[in-house]
Image 1 (spheres, rainbow, N blue to C red):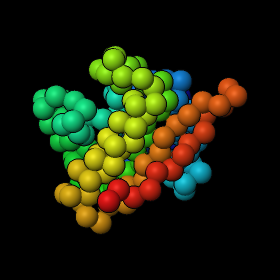
Image 2: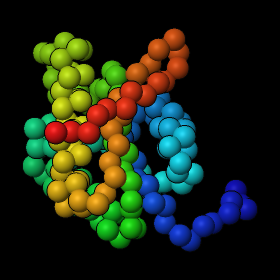
Image 3: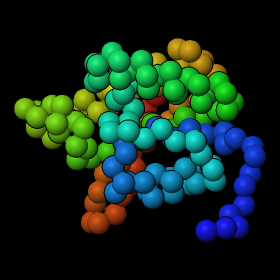
Length: 148
């Protein structure tokens, strides 16, 4: 494949979300809706959960957090979008004894905690948090309020 234009400037937005490919197009569409045609991405199972010691082990958190800080600083990222999603296999596996409503509650808590982790080091950074749901065969996003 040839001929794809290259833009040497770095995107100003970073999306951190789960690597579940069923949500990739929807997350990319969300970023366009909020004003970002191009984006840096960090995608691994669990996505934003990997920024929280309450959701991941220390080595996972350390590696993922270092990578996020590198992108934010090195690419002069101005906005980070954190996305958790319904039916996440990372959460179902890690919290196998907890029912879906409680898992969703944990995911929302982890989104808030991940936001605090990033803003502690980057106070001027804009961070948006979303929870993705599947309804009638389409993905919708619920924007979460700023953490307290």
